Image 1: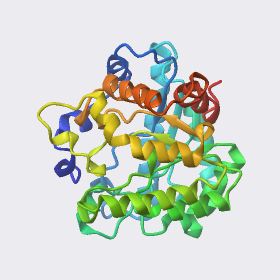
Image 2 (image 1 turned 90 degrees about the vertical axis):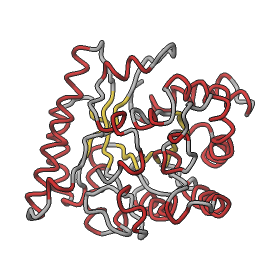
Image 3 (image 1 turned 120 degrees about the vertical axis):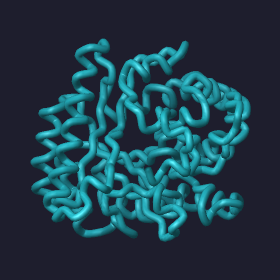
Image 4 (image 1 turned 180 degrees about the horizontal axis):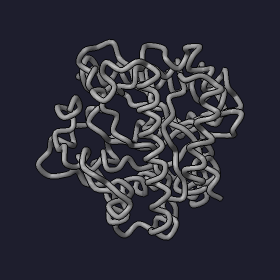
Length: 319
């Protein structure tokens, strides 16, 4: 509910979206493998008034259900999805995190890593868009989070980082503290275009570029080229007619070009953000835009293979 004022087309985001739905969205694109990133809907009312330990158990029970559901799809959809990134509240501490990782892996042998969102913003305008998991300013740098984060290194698990552009410095420090953990930044670090950042595109771009350049210095960090959601302020979700692939290229080009220049083609990967991006356009149009962008940037066939397939396969051990 807190997100409805942002997404508007709630039926595209909050209703069930299973493997059959994703496969239908592929259209004519030749998708040979896919990884599901944790998507269980975190409802704060579930945990209201509960002791912290009870909240953590309720969260993990839901994460475990999603892991099992994801693996069930592989049995009925020709192995799709081939990889799964689950949810785990890493603030539970290292020993408990190690135990819960084992449980998630038992529930889903395709488990590749964890995503624990860290989105936080002081502005009340963005409160409904931050993840209601008890995140707080500087969570990725807190001792309790980093204690649990260490479990990923011991288990050889990856980490999907989900933050706003205002938090890129925190992620950079986390990556520097754990060079043995492979981290992938989701949705290009989300340069915000809403709330207090609405109408400040040039300043946001300057701050975002600086943060991304710094983050890219950590060789264990990769970048997902994805996400045209409402939080970026592109406004596609408000239009009567969806944007064409050419229009999307015009908007994303300066962002994606900076990502590729900063991280290099070996540490970038194209990704989708579905069903969330369905409020803006179709899966087919998004990936057509990616292909056109590569042509505009003069990216070679060898490097296209890295961006569309090889880098993701390597990062998530799908090779």
